[in-house]
Length: 195
Image (cartoon, rainbow, N blue to C red):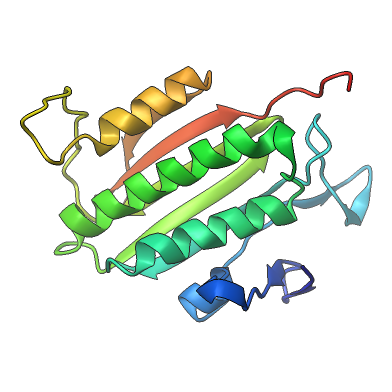
């Protein structure tokens, strides 16, 4: 997978197979905001987490439409793979992050579309953690519903909370400055094993 940097140095890889789209293809314009370099290393060398992964922050703005759920999930997966999360070591983390992205974007599209025509997913890889957040313009703060066998839906946030806690992570909901909300989850990157 190769990519070309945009004017801010972002790596905007294009993936043409199986209908997968990256941030540029989803939003129509590259809005990636990678963290690059430091004063000690200079701008050309990317930051690395303790696990050796390339650090960065990427935003995936999409319309609040059902078709945006798989597009966002594929874009996040492709970005994580491009950052070095390949192989058995990262499989469970990758599966957890993609499940969380699917649930949060689906919830935003289903419940906030009337007040929020756009949903923004942000992915951050920093200092041994992967953080995913989904922002919409609806001020309503959702609550995770308890499991109820009689309900056919409404358990997405409970699932997100459960997956996050099982992975040793944290999740929460915060208000934005514009009156909307951001739901986020941070999961630890698995440590290197002596294999």
